[in-house]
Length: 167
Image (cartoon, rainbow, N blue to C red; front, side, top):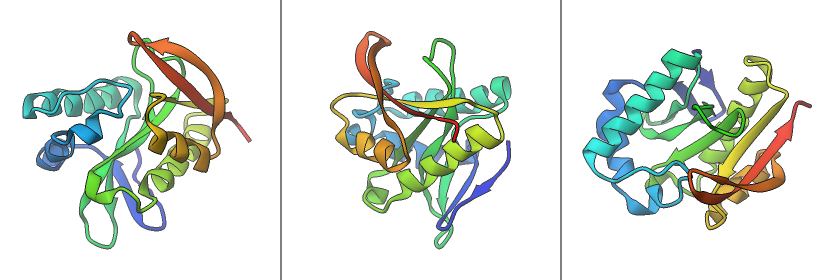
C-alpha cells in the first residue's frame, strides 16, 4: 500500500509503532461514540482495532492509513479505504483524535482516499457508512463530494450510506 501525500498530511500505512497514539485517540468516548464500527475505549480495544486495520491491509492490499501532520510529524488519526467482510461496498472512513478536529484533516484525507479508490483500486462507487447522529462525519462526507444514497442497517444499527460514483 502506497504512501499518499496531501497539502498538509502524510497518509502512510498504520503500524504497531502507532499503538500509543492510536490508543490515546480511542480512549476518548467522544471519538469512538461516532464510529459506525463499534470500538471500545480500553487499550485492549485499541490493540484489536489497530490489528484489524493492519490485517485488512494484509488481506485486501489496502486499508486505513495513519494520518500524520506534515508540519509536526504528529499522529492525527486514521483514514482510508475499507471493505471488511459484510460491509455494504468499498468504503472510505476517517477517525481523528479530538485535538485535530476542526482543522479540515478528515476532509483532506477523505478526498485523498476517494481518489485512491478510483485511481488505484478501480472502484466505480465509493461509500461511507455514517451513524445518523454523527453530524460532523455527515458534513465531511458532503465536503468530499458524497451525497446521501440510502439508509440501511449495518451491524444491528441504522446508518446512512453516503457515496459517489466514479467521475
